[in-house]
Image 1 (cartoon, rainbow, N blue to C red):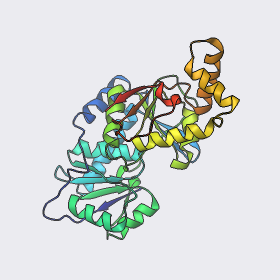
Image 2 (image 1 turned 180 degrees about the vertical axis):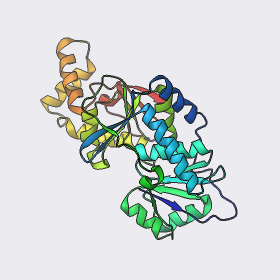
Image 3 (image 1 turned 135 degrees about the horizontal axis):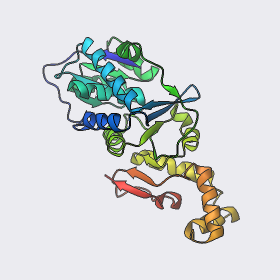
Image 4 (image 1 turned 90 degrees about the horizontal axis):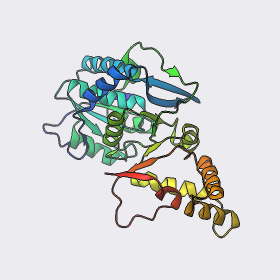
Length: 301
């Protein structure tokens, strides 16, 4: 996780990658004031869940803002973010908003030529990048590196999470390749005041999601298709009696036996607490969703 200082051309074209969060700091202060000790963020690191309370989030944002100022970040500066969505990235985004600078998100899987063109067009003054391979690509563009820890300075380690509360729990397993994703996450999280959780890595997302059993999923259209494929792989094959039993249960959940079967399948999938899936407007050529997803309420962008 690193911050890079980048050269600036005379004019910057940032519209394609810019993130607008006009109310984010006001909303964060609201939750830190009325629910300071309630969980705000959860993240799995090295096999252990950690939690940030609302007051922790606000304090870390203020520390990071001070660290950014020491690196020359001002109101006219532009911070580029690239990598998986997780607490460090969100905290740094809010810190840039705290100063009044501009925020950009760039996909982490860009090839060197495309990355060079985007950096030249968008002209970020600073950038936070996750993942060794992505960091190497940025290094090859001649950027110096600073660590997240250097920005935030001495700070208490986030608390280990020993048990999950029954409060609503949002879930994200996305990254900056979802262009609108940061706006969606921050709006849903800061508007609702619900805790937002992240997996340890993309490879562990399915297992970690089942541990969390979230009440709401924040998904891009691409991720929703991957989730649909995951569900399909975990259900019995088509034209088998077990699959017909599952389909029968979802079609008639009002009866006792069907409801019991449906609830067991939902628990297997980690959906036993799920109430809604946020997703962007679907394209006309999008594939139909499986019945195990279509039953959930969706907030459409």
